[in-house]
Figure 1 (tube, rainbow, N blue to C red):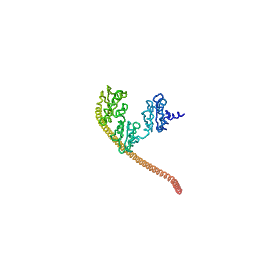
Figure 2 (figure 1 turned 120 degrees about the vertical axis):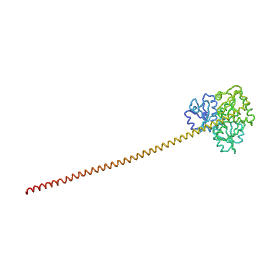
Figure 3 (figure 1 turned 180 degrees about the horizontal axis):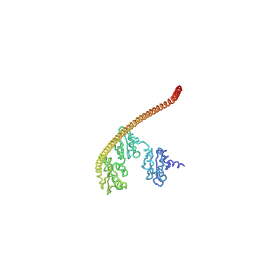
Figure 4 (figure 1 turned 90 degrees about the vertical axis):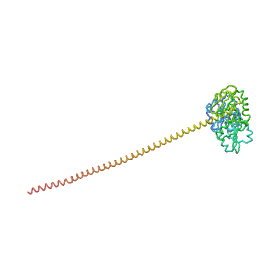
Length: 423
């Protein structure tokens, strides 16, 4: 029962509960595995041990044969794959699969970007590889926190209080001070250049090919250690000599040829060695190289790289000028378009006012005409009414006068009769 309780400390993630578990545990280390994988079986008790002793991050696992959607989300290509989901970001775990290494890495990821150290602690850590220390004030620490956040968990970082700000790489028992002006680009470039040994392996040098400053000596696996020792004597024997400084600016990688190497560089490979120089997205192959001449080759290619960088800067400047010219032409075109659009609006406005005035004038005219017509109609009606009244008055007079006329006529007739009788 107790054994089952301990095993339950590792969360079981499926396609159905992934979103819910992630919402409950914003800091979660997720192991993606397959039951048939031998490395996964070896990791299982180690992973359980970390889960039992570590509380800041919740450990979880997902069986990719049963919950393919979660594994596809993280583009899992091999087993086991371990990722840390922390505050909305995903971090790959690429260190040794040991409890101490996993715990140390989790401490680094959940702690400050630049953990504070003392000078005594630095003396102990002096032999660590990939170790970078910022000496400075709290203000400098805050600034470098932003610069170095992307390297959290990938290189070892430290901070020591000091009145003078300096950034130092601890590498092969040497301190290499950053000389360039501090900026995000310069600091990150310094870390990229110094995070590997002076003579890194081809695998370690893979990221450095992007910087355009890398020489690669390809040899057989049996020759690698012997060749590395010879190169260290040639280029690192006297660390105060200019040869040693060349390694800071143009590192050399030594290793045997692999399929991936051929895909990247396509080198010519006659015995005993092949030397490949990459720079500014160009590759130079040397069929045969005497080790003693490597330093001279580096010097020549540094000059070539510098010339290429100058050409690149000039090309970039021309591109910027052409881009600025295009932007100015586009701005002029937009201004002209705005001017024409404004003129069109003014013209439309004027035409609108003319039409409006015409409509107003027409309305006034129509109103006047209507008033005149009404007035005429009133006059006509008045004239017709007076004529009818006169006719009716005449008729009334005639009606009134008719009896009088009849009476006068009767009276005259009576008088005539009387006169006749007298006669």
